[in-house]
Image (tube, rainbow, N blue to C red; front, top):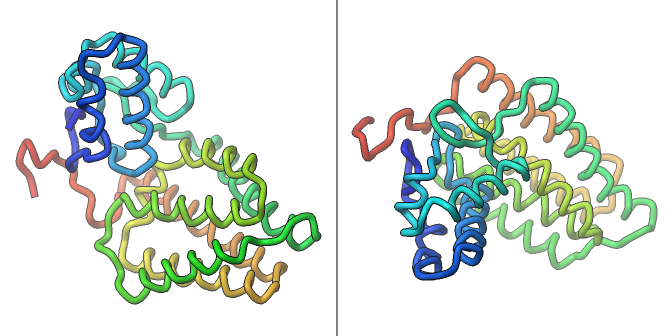
Length: 253
């Protein structure tokens, strides 16, 4: 793993290590950048993980130059920020967090409104697939993990994409990049997973039934609950059960 403090193996990055070897700086930089970005969005980097040029370069077996370039790009895009002990996930302040959640809510509601107003039609195949996937999660809940935030992001992105406007999905992705770390603090309890799953299925049921007004109400409540849980836990330094405070490589629980 390329973090100084980490909670697990990084399979996404490991799969591209070979392609970074022996390549020019620009190509190696692109490879490292893509792997790090994918790991950040997949939830494999946790809020307390710290990336340094040394550890990332050692992991990818490249010099520090492409690593430095990759991290700079990720900082500029809002996926990473500098901490006193390295680079880590972005933690917006409360005021910024509120604005980001307002943007997220507006984007997702716009997807429903597009269909309700007749501008677009839902891709029924996507709605059906999401229903099957989340019914399976409801029947067989996975173990609580911060990575479940990535699964939740996929649900909301695919739901918005089913309304037929890729540009909205792209903007939502940028918003998610900024709030991911705080969301990890509040999403991974078993009760939160159960309620989020039920809410997802209720939203899908309402969309299938073309009850768009109620779907917007449930979606609004769902997103506000996520915001409140994340903000409360983060502000009180009270991560949900299941977080490891110490790297397994250094020993711990």
